[in-house]
Image 1: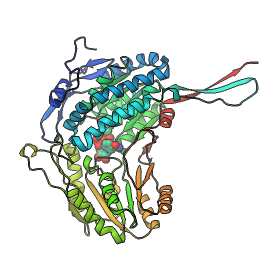
Image 2 (image 1 turned 120 degrees about the vertical axis):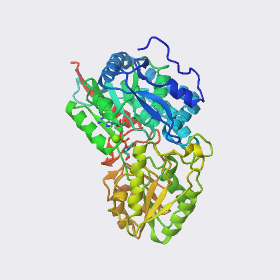
Image 3 (image 1 turned 45 degrees about the vertical axis):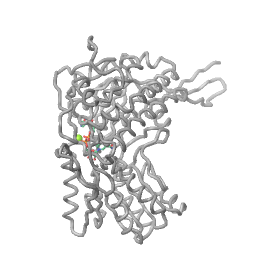
Length: 503
Ligand code: NAI
Ligand code: MG
């Protein structure tokens, strides 16, 4: 740990560029900012302008060792603390983050290109909400009593797992981190997070702020690349639980490494979520629902994005027209501008990937692409990674655009004729994260809700992850749940059986 104070502002600051610089080049380990053992750093860019805004510490196995050692030492005293006290500390972290919402929102907008009003501020508020929610659950870590024999008291008690290794992506990094860190801590574990290389700053600030409340070593964060920093964290012998959000491809690697050590793993992976719209739906509400479901304000960079929209044939043309008109009215621009609805893609890699899908779709015979909204004309944004949202029609279900996760502002609309055929098309996917059904016939809505292969199905709404509702996919979309009391009990604790023969 550094013995000199690090020059990050004590109070909330709205100067996101100065804050980004102040956070440069450091991990947060054992209650303080620590430089990487190797001295290596990598650049962090603002995807709206291309400017470099910071340098992040490039972590490796030596940094992982230091962070895990600190977490392991801290865990004993943390687990011995009354559970409600741990909860109260996590809830206090939530209250502290509320004071910093504006600051965190600006910082996350700067590094990810997500618009301040429509996305970044929402994320920062939700993080505080998640911490407050889990902070209230300290007294819920209950076991059971089991009838066994008259002279034997048989009970189960829940115990923490130890050090949790968490790997997070860049699309909603603070929120996805909070979904792991909050329940892990309340359950009595300590945590080492490996942030995503594209978005290491806001999560580092969150960690610093939470460490004003938490004992040192309970919550540590490293930045760095996946193979050099993420992989040694996953395979570290003292990491007793791994939780990962990201691509299916890396999820497989992480699950294999966890299997080598026989430790539990939670995986939140991709999605290709269907939205099913019946002609009897509330038309205006459903069109608005399609815009939010597709997460156009997040440039479609969401694992629950409604990237396949099935509309009953009599209304499909009107529906596409109404959707396109709504997206046309959205403002693409500087993420830090309050007027902006839609920001940028995160990185050049993702930009090229998304553009590749769009070009492939445009070149597909029979397919039509409707590009919506307008590219920003501000010269300061000419290097920005902006992509016009695209609505495709006329694609086949077998197309790569319909089967693979694009993770960009691209959705495909299809007509359908009856509930059976649309159910078959919707379930014809490797993924099973989320789905929604829009109809005023609740009998049909419920029937489909039961038969859709997904971890989360919503009827006549399509909200993002909510505190207290279990969240997580089936099929290739993942393993395990997050966001709820049950998820905390099942995935961050183990049950010990204790039997006492008192005769
Ligand atoms: P990714 O899965 O490569 O990265 C996610 C995290 O895993 C990052 O922190 C990364 O550093 C880490 N990582 C990478 N290789 C690793 C390894 N061998 N061991 C341990 N950790 C490792 O995702 P990426 O490349 O950022 O995005 C690619 C695609 O993944 C996207 O286009 C999208 O389809 C999907 N994705 C899904 C997300 C979700 O929320 N489910 C979030 C981000 C991406
Ligand atoms: Mg990758």
